[in-house]
Amino acid sequence: MKTCKCICIGRELGSGGREVARLLSERLGIPCYDRELLSRASEESGLATEFFENTDERTFLSTLRGWLQGGMDGREQATVLSEDHLFQLQSQTIASIAEEGPAIFLGRCADYVLRDRSDVISVFLTAKLEDRVERLVRTLGVNEKEARELIEKGDRKRAAYYNFYTFKKWGAASSYDFCFNTSLLGVEKTVELIQSLLHD
Image 1 (cartoon, helix red, strand yellow):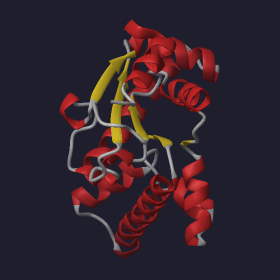
Image 2 (cartoon, one colour):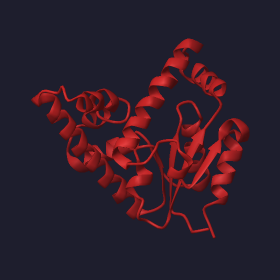
Image 3 (cartoon, rainbow, N blue to C red):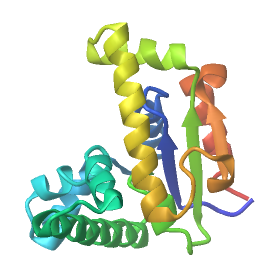
Image 4 (cartoon, one colour):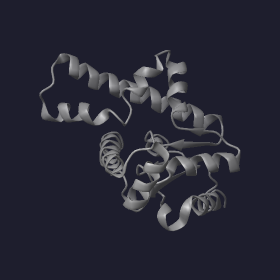
């Protein structure tokens, strides 16, 4: 097993990815970048954080659909180009952070951005649908129907974003070093297993 410096975590919505990343961060004493990455990219590029927030994986699908259908006007085409530019700026920030020291990245195609580094492991987290629904009901205060809708839309957007920028398949075992089912393992055990992968 290679010595690992950076951990990239992809996850299905409601699988507990954020909990796993935060707990890993606490136990390892290294920073975790999720939305913090957008703030850092904003600082380094001089662009407002809102630019990155409005073009991340949550809103990417609608723009991609218009591009694929070929019915985009000049303004919409410019939006695609600007999203691509923002992705490049975000990628530069991820690479810069990885150069500085150990870090945990949640989403943002970080596994693809850092694919040429030998000190990175990529992990994908999945869970049973009923557990994902329960987690969203508990953490977001939504009802079961709303939770299921959020999961369907969230996963679809994450997949479109990841597949477009990485040329890999989101959620497929072949796209990552390791895949874990948090329904079977729980958050604590998942964290322990990831920790066990970080050294020779």
